[in-house]
Length: 110
Image (tube, rainbow, N blue to C red):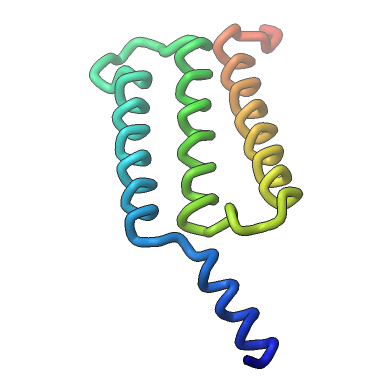
């Protein structure tokens, strides 16, 4: 078998199966329910820092699931997975910081 054909077959072997995609989808649905509960969707009250952090943690899990199974990042080298995870964590921490900045009203009054 030519080398190119072997490379193609190896890449196809790394694709997720239908069952794995279904499990990922079910996990995403469960995490969506978790988001609705943690986000207190029926309440108009502010969430506070702790619940916002829980929401962002669920968001991180959902993003990781999408990257790993739907974009097949699980088949990528470790440094790519680690890099995407690091960027996600930094982005979510920045969002939490922005929320905390507004929540605690840290802006000086004029």
